Amino acid sequence: MTLAFAMDWLNLLFRWAHLIVGIGWIGTSFYFIALDLSLRKRTDMKEGVAGTAWEVHGGGFYHVEKYLVAPKELPEDLIWYKWEAYLTWVTGFALLVVQYYFNATSYLIDPNVLTMTPGEAILISVVSLIAGWLIYDRLCKSPIGRNVPLLAACLFVLILAASYLFTHVFSGRGALIHVGAFVGTIMAVNVFGIIIPNQKKITASLLAGEAPDPALGAMGKQRSVHNNYLTIPVLLMMVSNHYPMLTGHPQSWLLVALILVIGGMVRHFLNRDDAGDPFAKFWWSLPVAAVGLVIAIIMTAPKDYSGGAAVADAEVIAIARTHCASCHAAVPTHEAFDEAPKEIHLESLGDLQRYADQIMAQAVQSDAMPLGNETGMTDTERATLGTWISQLK
Image (cartoon, rainbow, N blue to C red):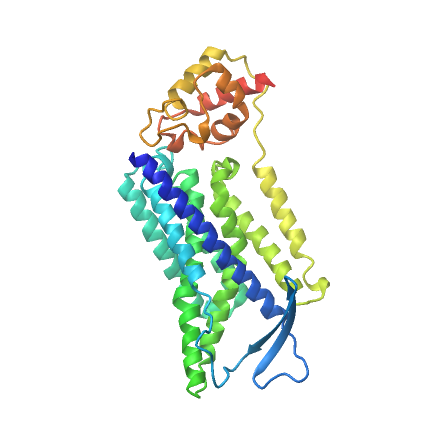
């Protein structure tokens, strides 16, 4: 068994696990925010109940009650929704290690962006994730944290600053996946370091007959709302590597800003709708999201390579053999691959014609390929490929 084969299996298993626990975490986040916003005061509620909700699902009816003060007794099987968040981060970081740290030269480093060693790239990665949480936590605990609009603006600037840093340090793929990891780390540590510990302190105080510190609940609620609004943007960051129009864009950090606006506005619309607010109070959020989407589409519009001087087939084959065939071949010579990625071969004229659209997206309209631009493909060579592909239409 080769190392590449073993790493492929680790990649698959960590990715599979990451998807499973991530769905669980996001699902509970969406559910509990929606549940909290849908609670209503009703007649004949039990003592200590702040609101209730009636729900129907799968043919059954559910009556949910929310206590502001814990009952005198709590069952031993009280459910704490925490492991979904913890395991999402653990599996995500494991996937980052397997995919990006072990293949830093191919996936994380782009010499055209910044020349560095794999060790330096990994150090920057780890330090940035830790620093992101520390800065965010300081902001929340500072006087800024008591001003919701100001804190939201500061968090927006923090993520945008990290995005700018990543796009000027890592490859396009490495940059956007690190934006996702940066935000995901903040969200996970919110659960691990703030929400769950504070909830345990509140529960202990209530069961002891003491008045809990209201600041603990307010802080936990604040971080939970942050996680809820960040969920939609971070999901797109995590799948961004499948879309070179995002990762290969020269100003991808500006696309991150638009993604934050689009995702945040959609989340706000859904939250206020779940809360039963009058439509007139939140209708504006969808038009703002739509404007952000239109700007993103315009920014990522493909370049037109038609109209250039005719390009000979032999010239294109030479480019492919120099920059593509080491990976995309029946027998790859690149040490990271036992077989061609996605079984795409780029060794003959027929191969190049067959996969022309993929080549245009990955190597012409963006610099996603070659990986990390290890072979040093030039802008002139990319333009040549683009012109040749345009001639095929």
